[in-house]
Length: 93
Image 1 (cartoon, rainbow, N blue to C red):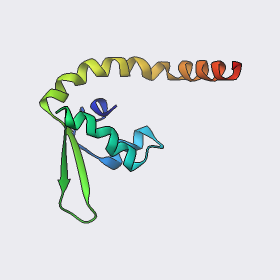
Image 2: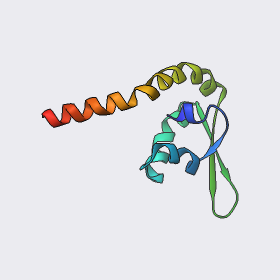
Image 3: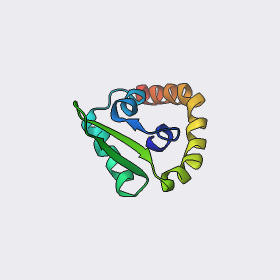
Image 4: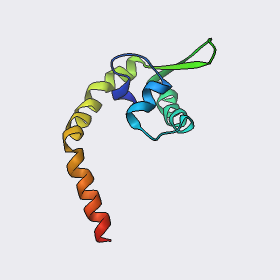
Protein backbone atom coordinates (compact mmCIF):
# COMPACT_ATOMS: atom_id res chain seq x y z
CA UNK A 1 0.00 0.00 0.00
CA UNK A 2 2.61 2.49 1.06
CA UNK A 3 4.80 2.05 -2.00
CA UNK A 4 1.90 2.63 -4.37
CA UNK A 5 0.56 5.59 -2.36
CA UNK A 6 3.98 7.26 -2.23
CA UNK A 7 5.10 6.59 -5.80
CA UNK A 8 4.27 10.08 -7.11
CA UNK A 9 5.22 12.36 -4.23
CA UNK A 10 5.88 12.58 -0.49
CA UNK A 11 2.70 12.49 1.57
CA UNK A 12 1.64 13.33 5.07
CA UNK A 13 0.03 10.71 7.26
CA UNK A 14 -3.45 12.21 6.69
CA UNK A 15 -3.02 11.80 2.92
CA UNK A 16 -1.94 8.20 3.40
CA UNK A 17 -4.79 7.21 5.71
CA UNK A 18 -7.55 8.70 3.52
CA UNK A 19 -7.49 6.07 0.72
CA UNK A 20 -7.36 3.20 3.20
CA UNK A 21 -10.33 4.36 5.26
CA UNK A 22 -10.87 3.27 8.84
CA UNK A 23 -7.17 3.05 9.73
CA UNK A 24 -6.12 4.82 12.90
CA UNK A 25 -3.14 7.14 13.03
CA UNK A 26 -1.46 4.72 15.42
CA UNK A 27 -1.93 1.75 13.07
CA UNK A 28 -0.71 3.75 10.07
CA UNK A 29 2.43 4.78 11.94
CA UNK A 30 3.01 1.18 13.03
CA UNK A 31 2.50 -0.08 9.46
CA UNK A 32 4.99 2.45 8.06
CA UNK A 33 7.73 1.48 10.52
CA UNK A 34 8.62 -1.71 8.63
CA UNK A 35 9.28 -0.09 5.23
CA UNK A 36 11.07 2.76 7.05
CA UNK A 37 13.28 0.25 8.88
CA UNK A 38 13.92 -1.60 5.60
CA UNK A 39 15.07 1.65 3.96
CA UNK A 40 12.20 1.86 1.49
CA UNK A 41 10.47 4.87 3.05
CA UNK A 42 11.93 8.00 4.58
CA UNK A 43 10.16 9.87 7.38
CA UNK A 44 10.57 13.61 7.90
CA UNK A 45 9.14 15.40 10.92
CA UNK A 46 8.23 18.98 9.97
CA UNK A 47 8.90 21.50 12.78
CA UNK A 48 5.50 23.18 12.69
CA UNK A 49 2.46 23.40 14.94
CA UNK A 50 0.55 21.15 14.86
CA UNK A 51 3.32 18.62 14.20
CA UNK A 52 3.35 17.11 10.73
CA UNK A 53 5.18 14.06 9.40
CA UNK A 54 5.84 13.35 5.75
CA UNK A 55 6.78 10.03 4.20
CA UNK A 56 8.59 9.59 0.89
CA UNK A 57 10.01 6.68 -1.05
CA UNK A 58 13.75 6.20 -0.99
CA UNK A 59 15.64 5.12 -4.10
CA UNK A 60 15.17 1.53 -2.93
CA UNK A 61 11.43 2.07 -2.47
CA UNK A 62 11.12 3.67 -5.92
CA UNK A 63 12.78 0.61 -7.44
CA UNK A 64 9.95 -1.49 -5.99
CA UNK A 65 7.14 0.87 -7.08
CA UNK A 66 6.63 -0.59 -10.58
CA UNK A 67 6.55 -4.28 -9.61
CA UNK A 68 4.14 -3.50 -6.75
CA UNK A 69 1.98 -1.28 -8.94
CA UNK A 70 1.15 -4.09 -11.37
CA UNK A 71 -0.73 -6.29 -8.85
CA UNK A 72 -2.43 -3.18 -7.46
CA UNK A 73 -3.64 -2.24 -10.94
CA UNK A 74 -4.93 -5.78 -11.42
CA UNK A 75 -6.75 -5.71 -8.09
CA UNK A 76 -8.56 -2.41 -8.63
CA UNK A 77 -11.07 -3.60 -11.28
CA UNK A 78 -11.42 -7.00 -9.58
CA UNK A 79 -12.28 -5.70 -6.09
CA UNK A 80 -16.07 -5.94 -6.58
CA UNK A 81 -15.77 -9.63 -7.57
CA UNK A 82 -13.41 -10.32 -4.67
CA UNK A 83 -15.78 -8.58 -2.26
CA UNK A 84 -18.76 -10.56 -3.59
CA UNK A 85 -16.83 -13.83 -3.30
CA UNK A 86 -15.92 -13.04 0.31
CA UNK A 87 -19.53 -12.28 1.17
CA UNK A 88 -20.72 -15.47 -0.49
CA UNK A 89 -18.05 -17.50 1.30
CA UNK A 90 -18.82 -15.93 4.69
CA UNK A 91 -22.57 -16.46 4.22
CA UNK A 92 -22.03 -20.15 3.51
CA UNK A 93 -20.17 -20.68 6.78
